[in-house]
Amino acid sequence: MNNPKSSFLISAPSSSSGKTTLTLGLLRALRNRGLAVQPFKCGPDYIDTIHHSAAAGRPSLNLDTFMASDAHVREVYRHYASRTDVSVAEGVMGLFDGADKMRGSSAEIAALLDIPVVLVINAQSMAYSAAPLIYGLKNFDARIRVVGVIFNFVNTGSHYRFLQDACADAGVEALGYLPKNEALYIPSRHLGLHISAGTDYEQIIEGLAEMIPRTIDIDRLLQIACFGHCFESQDVVWPPAHSGLSYGKSPNLRITVARDDAFTFLYHQNVEVLKAFGKISWVSPLKDVALPPTDLLYLPGGYPELFAERLSENRSMRASIRDYCENGGLTYAECGGMMYLGKSIETDSGSILEMAGVLDCETTLQGAKMTLGYRTMYWSGLEIGGHEFHYSSFKSRNIHVEPAQIANARGVPVETGFFRCRNTFASYVHLYWADKPQFIQYLINKSRSQWTDSLR
View 1 (cartoon, rainbow, N blue to C red):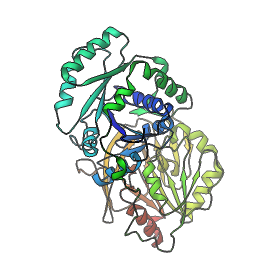
View 2: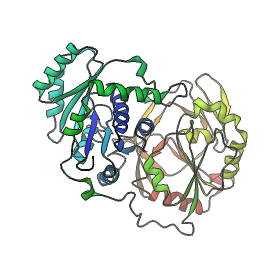
View 3: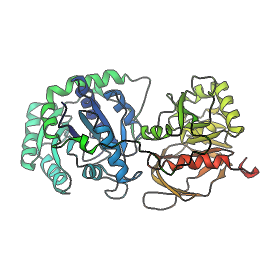
View 4: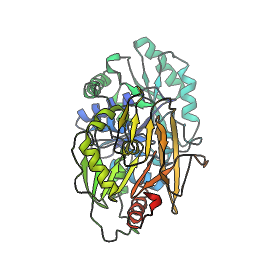
């Protein structure tokens, strides 16, 4: 399947409709056909992309029009979609749900990229009432092309025939259905799916891939989602050359990135941009005994609270990271990475476990409430988007706060801080610097400047 290509966005009326389950099954089913499949995820989610990558066999990319410019989203999409047979984007929440009305929504991204939408509808307690729901989603915005519907939790042929009638009267094609199957259920943590050592994701994904062709017309889906033009004519090289960046005397930094079961929240595009600054090495704070030679250490987010005991037991790695940071090593940590750099983590069971001790703070899961939302940080003249999502909170902290302002999606300042200790920078916000590589240059420049006792 060389040209034209197929490309579509899977969305739904609301969350919990089964978008991710269907997406994972379709990615694997298409891959099992011998097709090169490129997954995408609308919005800031860094967990679904891990599952996407496992199902498709290639990295899943985030498409987010709040954290990045329209031009950047187009560049990323065209670059990766042009190199595969089928591009499958999973939406976020409901079709028109965005950070502020439609801003950042799946619908906005579908319109921006001119890709058709396939709806997933939870039909467990619904029959012909699906007609006005589908009709409304189809006709609410003329820029959005809703081309098909797949129904979830449909266990009988007679139920599906009612739903086919609803689709026909709403003017949208019915592409099939998924029956309820508890054996193919993927557990969730907080707002979405998560990574659990006790779940056999490969078995679930392969099971979905085997089941989907029985009740869903994949051939028809690819046909109605077929592009009438060739992607290659719009090919874009990404990441682009970062003009205007001043690498100074260190064009080839030794960059170390933490990645293991405790630190998984990575944006693939961020890592690709890091490669412009040097060579990347991967390290596991759970298993490795020490850092390799490092000029820039990046500790991303994840679930350190789930692995706090193992992290605490790895004293040699904690000491290695502490020595590196205390000797002025440049470090950037976000959310879970920041928690790990603190003195301790108090788990939801009440256990208090010692961490790296770089930052004068303690975090806790006790009685904490969810903090969630888009963020924009204004720092030293740079404006950069990101996302904040955590259940932990500070039990105590005494860290220097950088003169940076952080606001929510509506521009209202929030209490979240951007912290610094020596050349260690940290925040609860997951920043998306793929569209603002200047942020990494800022960190490099700041680390080269003199710090005062107030930063110690």
